[in-house]
Length: 249
Image 1: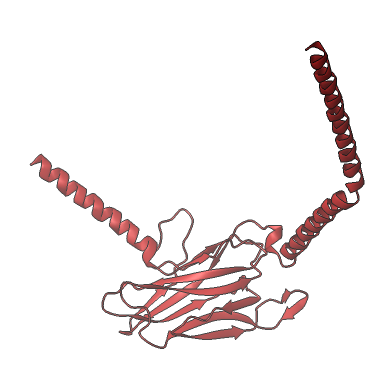
Image 2 (image 1 turned 135 degrees about the vertical axis):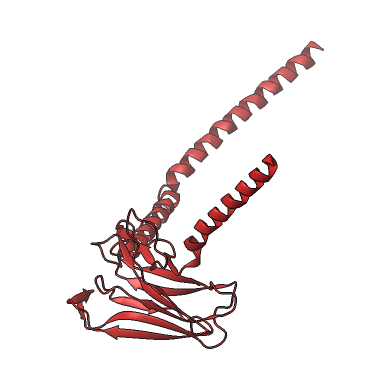
């Protein structure tokens, strides 16, 4: 009886863990490839799993935040999917690299040409975005997932700090602290500076090998000269010793 209770308790615990784990990975999510730093540019992947065992995902719509608009949004082509980019005028004036932006991307839609995301699979949809805002710690992307049986799942509920995760949470991109290397031009400048330092090191090494070569050659000659004197003296001493041995004999 005791063994049965333990088994039943274990089964209940396992079911509870599974129930908690499923929502954590089964919804549409977004993750950066590397880091997504404030003020920088990043490639983010929208990960879309198929939650159904009798239908395929045939369309995915991702709405981009309008409260923190992104001046640059470029989706990467995905084999088997058609991409539609929806643009509109920003609510507030927006500039990028000193130029005014008259349109921003408000939605990207991926529509399957074939079967789409079949049961038991997931698909990543990469998008290059920037410049990322510096006045917020996260970006919310509301998504809509459509299945081949016409079912529509809206991942639009915004998670709140200190509260349980909603049933259909919207994808949230967490932004890291700003870094100089994440801004355009800085990384290139650092590379150029590194290359300059490397060339300087090579030049210094060459100068040491060529310009400083006179001192090295002179020192070598002196050492060889001293060795010659020592060898010669040893030869003379050996000759004298040999002569004495003969005379004694």
